[in-house]
Image (cartoon, rainbow, N blue to C red; front, side, top):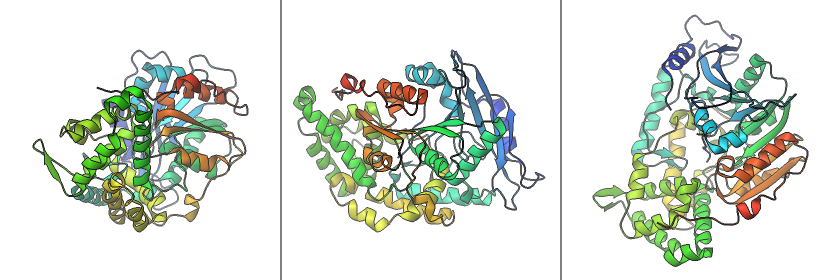
Length: 483
């Protein structure tokens, strides 16, 4: 739901520093002051024109408690290429939960989308949130069959439970890796860097973090950009299967409206339902490999997130119907990118205590695609019992309202952060503006030049109406990959 990373190998020097900083427990002063120390950068910045500054923010794992454990958060500052006098910096909040960003910034800056948006006339500041990216400690469980639809088999659920037990045994307090603590880390980052005023830019689950900042510490926040918004009152598992199915239906509707796609793939919905129904009857051996309903459900979640995979989905489903499961097999082998325990410490504290597994399962009976996703979403509830991250404050699930100028940008096709979430939230922001980008997928700032122009215009003057004229003709058509 809500994972999007702009952009990877961690430099040895940085890794050594981060690990030593993160391991500060024995002998460390209790309630030590946060400290930012300049240091080497993670990632490759060759060919990047902007000046780059890096370092590490070291803070208490538990503020105000008896523990002396510290966490180390890598920080990257990208200096503006053409700085505007008096411009405030943008703090970027990455998605996930369980993602990271600092290793990927160089790649983003070498790409067209990054050059059009990042650090043109404002400095941009990035950090990996506690437990994620290349922060230390890192709450990673290794290769586990997990995506935003949940653990994709029972073995994965058991791996995640065992991972929680290992982390607890090592001294990690899993209850301290959540949005509330990230807000405090951001406070400390601003304090150590001397930032009196900032703009916030959240992508995917990073928008959930941005909204937590707006709720708990809005002072000095000039403007907020929410790309693919996910709000605290939104339901991750309840309605999750339906969100995936709805996104797939939009893709197939666009195919029916496209003459070439419709001619070549006239009934992708019926084909998908047939494949789903077969897998729902039990695991199937196809081409010498066993596939389950969970596997296909997880595939659809990921495919509807991704522009290239969504554009190829009618063709992919036709191949599935013909017995060619290559795309599914490749996706099953290539799942990675999560720090799985950090993913769960957030969700088990911020999402699932406010949701009902029974309600999720009831909604999942709607159609064959929703039924594919029932058990994987259900495993989230099982795993969260082992993570035992404490009782959440009910305020964490309440809607946010704010007078801060806020730009909501939602993709029309999004199985994790559907446009309905943004539509429901923007009315509580008197200075909020909403644009739904047609015919595009999750993470619109990466996939849409039009969205990037809107963002630049908004940050230049957050009180002015954004110019949406670029939506037509740029987003008039969803262009399919028919091969």
